[in-house]
Image (cartoon, rainbow over all chains, first blue to last red):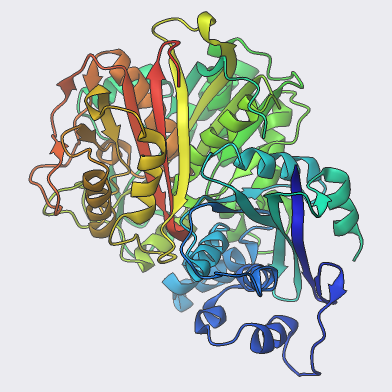
Length: 203
Length: 392
């Protein structure tokens, strides 16, 4: 049976791993940066990322923290993310750079983040995942489709593990990541809509 | 998970291409076979400071076709992106004969930027600018009660959406899947590709020594799939056999130098397939320096250097979210007609690995082909299509 091996939630209220809040020293930094410094560090690409990628990347870091053989290249883990706002924060940022003919400065560094699936690539690059990466846009309430889509990802015979879940960040002040490590296992809560809804509601 | 339906195949039941070369698959294919291209030079369009070459739709023709079908004004509240998608889906659904309103039918929408042009007049967060909103509106237009899934995997979306549909059918979640691929070009997208220095100032030259970049295009394409028992699949019908998605784990905006993800996706679908059975490998072939070089390496590594290869961007540009659906459909119909279209714009090999590539069409009697795509985010996708009821 597919089960949730570990889960992480990050919202402006804080970060939670398997239901246990992550303790942070008081800081002036916004939450993503306050999490990055003690829990990740030494990965300057983080500061180039847009709000969606920052929160999703951090959630993936907390999810994988302590995993044995963490950075060994592998093809058997897929990254499958769901979002509703997608790349809106970067879309809106990019639109501001081209809106005014007198102040026209389109930037490739902003434009590249106007694709929601860049986050899946950021996670694959960091962890050397050569497996499937997929990004779907849907309504947050549509938990059934999320559950079924992750389940169906295992129809690819090479996929034995999915790092997946919900990530949304319409702007840098509003963000939410609920990521799960889903695998065939004897332990953990079942990968099912009711379970997911319970975890995602409890914030 | 249980793959209970191994005696069933995923069969093409209907399709449509709305492109600047024609509003249906037949006329688009006819133009491609005749060597026509919809690529034109635009100067000052959308008040862009630099000119560009692109393949753009005539929305007058689209709206006339919609008015003929549904009456004047019926689609007044829908955006251009939604209208082109609806026109394409309507034609494909008609051919398929399936019931789009059935709870056993699911809609999949492949797009990279959907309604992003709406930000030009109002750059604020609202549901209309989010692609899942368009997907639900399009599905609702056809009376479909299910949530529609938007696949957003950059330029590989059109294959990824077909792979998602195959899985939903295979798992028994639905009996029919409507896969729509569409993107509307805009100031937003063109300026972004210009900022990347990715656009060619002339019609693109895939795999050619003198290639300088890609041309953007707009199109909507739809393929309808049904699952059916193997013995009920006739000899000429197209089956979506296998699909795989793999990442380069290398860079968010540049392809891997070893073609890693692309090679791995090809390996995953080819396994026991003899390359001599393949009519063609229809590649991404954007005509950027890096993409085409990367694909040549991946094809070589996968042992496909002698298989006929073609790229279609010289006819209608890079249609982004539509590309995977459009180019799969077009290749199905071409191979069915015994043809492998030539690679328009190609003259002299400009990649490091030898490929079996030509600007001229060739004949074929083979019954299998491969479609591949790569995109930002390091994603790569490949699918194997096959005619008839044989095992997949």
